[in-house]
Image 1 (cartoon, rainbow, N blue to C red):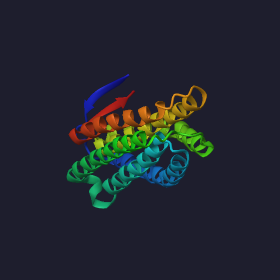
Image 2 (image 1 turned 30 degrees about the vertical axis):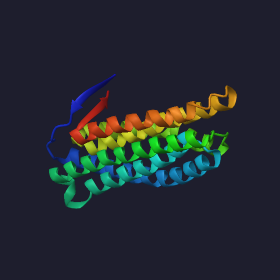
Image 3 (image 1 turned 45 degrees about the vertical axis):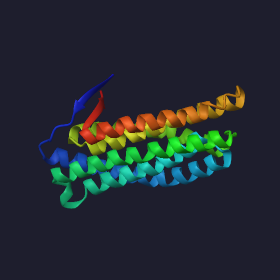
Image 4 (image 1 turned 90 degrees about the vertical axis):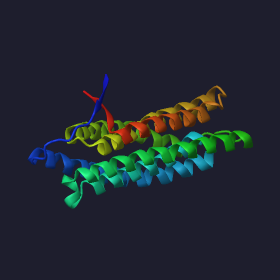
Length: 213
């Protein structure tokens, strides 16, 4: 179950600082993988005319921006700064909102042009790796975010979880298009992601987070 909570300002101690270092390290590791993921995802999506794959590749770039924001948040004197947390939280919210209009416009363009997704081995491989790894990263960051009182960290974790959900949706969409001829499954996944991104952006801006126990 997931409970809606508002993250409160924590007491900064040795344990809190250790968690801050962990958050920074996890974000750096995520950033390295997302660089690879976004390039391969976009290449596979453009090659297969897959809206969901393209959207997933773009969402990886948005996730990378969120990771950079969290690294910035927990570097140097900003680590102890409540003002830095507010700025980081709102920047992560904006990163959610950047994704939504891109996906909607891309869906409209491809539907108008009559483009249909094609099978993509590269897309299947890359999305499968993310489906296996991103939930672990996302849950770890959301737990750290709750302990740190950092909606920015929790928001980055949510983006990692959305990446995994979208990866599952992309795989399902490609499979349904190939086996059942359900061409609409691919743009439907992309449109759903846009709606979720708007919702999560609002929650990040307000400082809300869902904490998994």
